[in-house]
Length: 318
Ligand SMILES: NC(=O)c1ccc[n+]([C@@H]2O[C@H](COP(=O)([O-])OP(=O)(O)OC[C@H]3O[C@@H](n4cnc5c(N)ncnc54)[C@H](OP(=O)(O)O)[C@@H]3O)[C@@H](O)[C@H]2O)c1
Image 1 (cartoon, rainbow, N blue to C red):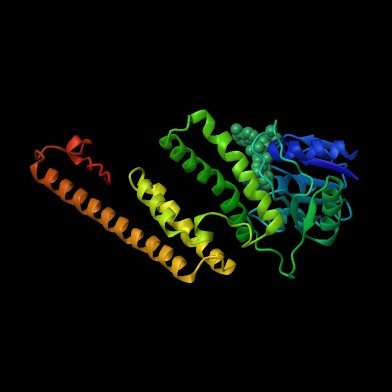
Image 2 (tube, rainbow, N blue to C red):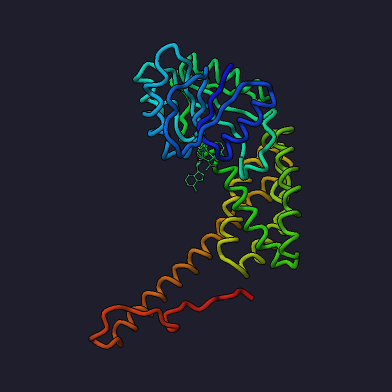
C-alpha cells in the first residue's frame, strides 16, 4: 500500500514515522502548500488543520477520481462529509481519527494499542483499517448505519484529554499553594495521571475511581472544599462539579454508605448555593459602585477609566 500524508504537523509526522517503521511506502506534503500534479497513492490521509479540510477536499477532487484509491482525514469533529468535494468527484472518503494526544512533533505518543475511529465508504474504511493495523492501532467502527456522531465523539475526547490538562493546571496551582516547588508540580502529577489512565484501561468504570468520594469520606471532602475556598473561587467550583460527577460512580461501587454519599451530595449543593450567593452579592456591589461612580462623574466625561474604587474587595474566608 502506498500512502500520501498531507500535513507535516503533529499527527502527520507521527503517522508518517510509524508507517515508515512498519515498512509502508509513505510520502508527505505540506498542509499549507499547493496540490501535487498527481496523486500516486492508494490512500491519502489529510492531516491538516480543520479549517483547511475543505480547501484540500477541493484540491484533491480532480486528482482522486473513481477507482483511484481513497481519501480520509484525521480530524475528530467531522465525519467523512468534510471531504464531500472528493466524494462528488467519485472518490471514496472517510475519517481516520486516532484517539491519542499529539502535543509535540518530537514526542509523539505510543500508537500501538490506541484506538482509531474509522468510518466512511467501504473502500476508504478497508484501506484505513489496513493502515491502522499496520502500525498497531485498533480500529473502532460505528455500530449503527448512520455512523458515529463525530461532534459528540470529539467532545468526549476533548473533555477527557484537554480537560485533564486543564485540571492538571489547577492541581499545579494548588500544589504550589500547598508548598510544593513549581518545577516539581507537573512531575508529581504525571505518574498519578498515568496510574489513573492505567486503572481506567484495566478496571473500566466505576472500578477505576479511587479517593474520598469512593470511600464516602465526607470529612476529607469538606476539608478540601474549605481550604480551596480560601483561594481562587474557580478551584472550589471545579472540585464541586467533579464531586457531583463522581457520586454516581461511588454509588455504583456500593463501598460507601448511602448516607455518607448523600451528605457529600448535600455538601456540594450547599457550597454551590453559598458561592452563588457570594457571587450575586459581588455583582450587586459592582452594580451599586458603577451607579455611584456614574452619578459623581463630571458631565463632560465620555468614557470610564478603570478606577481603584471600582475594584471589588477580595474576600478571603478565615
Ligand atoms: N493533535 C492531536 O492530539 C490530534 C489528535 C487526533 C487528531 N488530530 C487531528 O489531526 C489534524 C491535524 O492536527 P495536528 O495536531 O497535527 O495539527 P498541527 O500540528 O497544527 O498541523 C496541522 C497543519 O497545520 C499546519 N501548521 C503548522 N503550524 C502552523 C501555523 N503556525 N499556522 C498555520 N498552519 C500551521 C501544518 O503545516 P505543514 O504541513 O506545512 O507543517 C499542518 O499542515 C486535525 O484535524 C486534528 O483535529 C489531532
